[in-house]
Length: 257
Image (cartoon, rainbow, N blue to C red):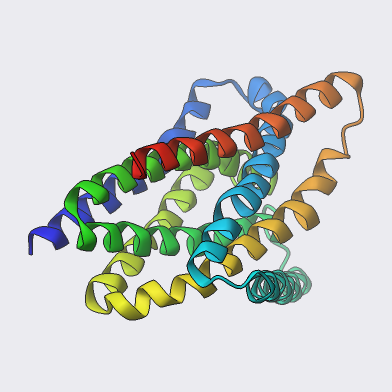
């Protein structure tokens, strides 16, 4: 019972990380419009960095076969392609039947789906670490929290660009973070099954992040071609990747002292 309580508290703290996007409430509308393209670039760097530096290597380490993991990543990309097709099809039919007051781009909905899968995976990792050792659970929780902060800030920028209001972006991002609880409960009930499922869920989440970043977000970065945005977006893209690399090194030092 103590492990269950510790796991749920850790999941709750990680869910609160999504509220870091609330910093945008302190900005004016003009400042927000100026910073959104930079936040989208940060989101691209974080998503790709997370996929290639964190999720895929972790999956290979657990499974052992690079070719199997690569194939699963491609399945993840293909699956998110189909999901976006379905979202766009439904979106088009809604427009034909009844024009919405404001348009939310399919890209924003896809970002939420990908984030939900990732948070489910985090729940499995958190619960699994607490089952092994409470100290390992605490260090894993700290590593995930540090990992989440830059991602959630970038996600809010992507959702704002996708048509959500600031309040909706923060709120829906928080709702997606709650998928960490089913992941944790799944592990607490079926720890062996949950652990083995990571070799599939990790590369699928990676595939989703690669698809969202490459298909939906990178084209947005090319919509603004001024030299100022070139510098700002390039820097934000690089910062996103650097954050993921730094966090992975920190996680390794934290989890393998």
